[in-house]
Structures are given as structure tokens and as C-alpha cells.
Length: 86
Image (cartoon, rainbow, N blue to C red):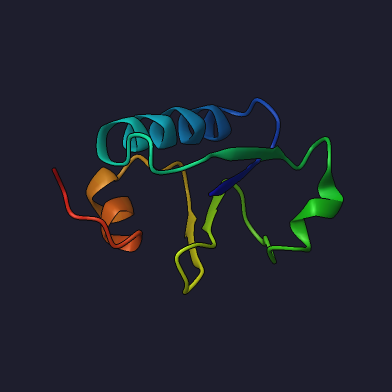
């Protein structure tokens, strides 16, 4: 999974923390997180068609899933990623 953020903004920091918590709790050992800071590498936004940040992109398994926001709504994130709530 790739998480696109913008520097150290409040929403970016929250999204990183929330995603790590979700992965540790619900997908331990089954996912890899790549955090991409668009303040440092804005050209990377084009590859995954990022139009808002923070945005989480899950490419595998297909279909590609995108979630925009700070990922604080755990149940909605799990539903979007097609995972059941533990």
C-alpha cells in the first residue's frame, strides 16, 4: 500500500499513525506501507492519479482501492479495503 501525504501536516501525521495502527491490528505481517511525501516528490502523484492528500492506494489485490482522508474512521477503512472488523 502507498500512502501519499504532504509533509508533516496534522492530517498527514494522523493518516500515517492511523494506517500503522490499522495494519498492526488487522493485517499484521500481511502488508507493506510505503509513505510518499509529495512535498519532496510531487511528480510521484501522477503515477497513481492523486488529486487529494492524504490518499491511501492499495494496488493488490486488484481492483485498486483509494481512500482519501486521515484514515481515522477505522471501520470505513476496513470496509473499503474489504477486510472484516476484528
